[in-house]
Image (cartoon, rainbow, N blue to C red; front, side):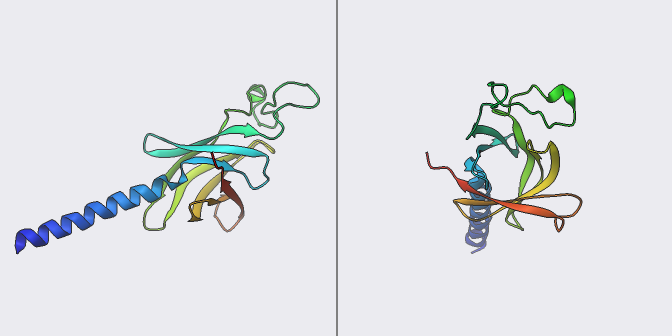
Length: 149
């Protein structure tokens, strides 16, 4: 009886760990930002999640006729780096108890500012990306939609 109880307990613990990992990886994929002008691909980097810009609706700067660059970055040395391929999400880990990704940051190339960020999901096709300063009450949530391949 003891072996059966131990086996059952071990099975429950392992299946819960696998289910939590599966939920954690739900963030992986390409996402259309709320404004609809960019796709961000989120992927796992070690034990954390990060994302990079992989598509822009208008990738060419109308003034320079060249690919858009990070002209709003506070460090002028970064102004020539291309927006395509730019890592704009980093440092996220999945909080199984809360059911969301936290501890990360998001960079907004439209204004050159970096924010703390949490990401949650109500279903497999949408993300609630909340950027904030200080505490999450002072911030904004953008809803991203999964890009169909």
